[in-house]
Image: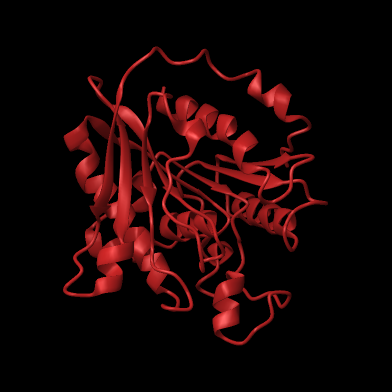
Length: 267
């Protein structure tokens, strides 16, 4: 198992800063038809941050955290000015909706990216799916469980990589709450990323905060996720522990690792 002894040591291995370029910001793009549903119309939207005057750049689809009950779309500051496009997707939230609605929304946002990023100059072969906490959970579900993208004719094995930041690997605690189950009662069913481990999934980088500071054993979940992927023969999965950082604090120091992963997989 690959752990991260010091964030600074990893950051020193980053490539040189990208050459200066300019970017377009396109806000509030609807990514699925509302059919008169006001909630879809309001929340099923994404922001697009995209390099100008360049071609075949990578794209990171980023899902925000918030426990599947809160949060909003964002373009993380550390991902700006890095010669990558970023899709910041919003999705409907519990308890207004129940599982698997927010997973379906995440899949629709990813499908929009696959279907549209080439129009802006991006490469459909360099799409990475990522997010923090609940967003990391959604990223993992969309990539590992093929049923969510099947209606769009998209095979998630075509993605360049998956990078969940402290994402739940078992069935998400909000889904358990919807069923009347405690957040300390573990469940693994078909709404758990670990249920869908397979060796032919795209390259995976699992990022976790410090095991002694993380939320509800999130590091140990990530370690189990990593182990099961290795057991089924996945050839390219890493687990990095951001020592000294808690669940929320690991986002910013995790960004250089995400960018390093993207650049390495895109070269």
